[in-house]
Image 1 (tube, one colour):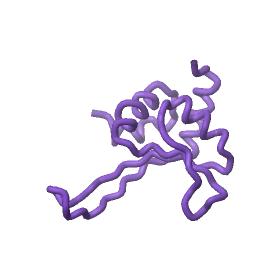
Image 2: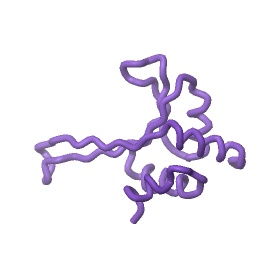
Image 3: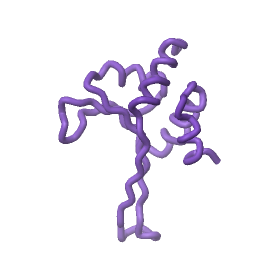
Image 4: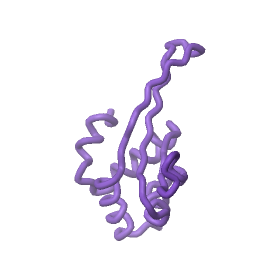
Length: 107
């Protein structure tokens, strides 16, 4: 079970360091010819904070940051994880920046 201290820590980490990004790629084999890939990520010099965030959020994978291998990233890019795990987890956390992501991702 995730404790309130860990949830508070992850809330602060997300408010300070996390980002949502979306890449749009032309892909001719698709009906609409465009692929949209949303990604949530946190970058840190140490892996430990990302392990805590991964545990609290219940999703994501931790990788070395491409091109900056001294850094670690928690990446959530699977659509199922974004919609069924990440967004509900973010709704449970006390985020200062919550209103910013709500505009983009709430129904």
